[in-house]
Image (cartoon, rainbow, N blue to C red; front, side, top):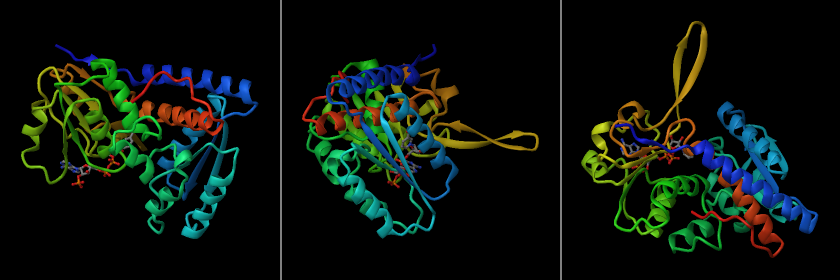
Length: 303
Ligand code: NAP
């Protein structure tokens, strides 16, 4: 038996369509488009590719999209000055500082400086704290967990009562907010990490297994309870032999070829959680822009 394919491209397209409509409606009402400022520091090619696709998608959604590309040797003070200016700029509704930053910079200090109302990545303490206290309404929810949750909702609905969920990974970026969203949806949640004993047995107990580790194909079919929903968040670039050319392909944290035979539903990589992250970033920017005008964004999906 082969698992149900959870199509992140299709779900993200429906989010983008709703966002584009909401953005046009805001402009019709106020004459102002949602504004997204994306800040990138340094020359990392993967980060530049992400930022360019975020900026392009923002334009497709009808946003005012602004990109700030800073050199590798940017100081903490210079970066914080830019964020402070963007916080004060009324044409900017959302600020995203692309991570990782060069090692000379302190990402936490920068993230916490972003005004919570404009923190469309949902990573600063105010937004993280709101999720932790069960408030999924008044803040901005971190994009990748919010997107993963939408995919889980497609399979299980919004109430996960009685289901066991295991998240492998406990990062502030993904694992912790994912665990909290699952908990808020009434799942019984385990957050596993590198110090977890007998990880395979922990995972085999999961009705919903979410892998966010950064280790290619780590999760094997023997880790998966038959019929479980498997959400693969991992993005790992693997080199592929192509004559003289140095090419890579994307591989998840789950061994898809094995897992698809035992899971009940599964996300692919690419085309699963990845497209959801960018869609939820656009949704958060729209929500922030409506709030800036004292309005509620007409988006009917929720994490
Ligand atoms: P991270 O900060 O490096 O965290 C990795 C987590 O995995 C840590 O909690 C770590 O445990 C745990 N871990 C490492 N090795 C393990 C092992 N052998 N067994 C069990 N747990 C282990 O990474 P992240 O930022 O959360 O990202 C994780 C993956 O998701 C990466 O591949 C990243 O590219 C991907 N990602 C994708 C998107 C997207 O848009 N689709 C967005 C964000 C992240 P400890 O805490 O004990 O060290």
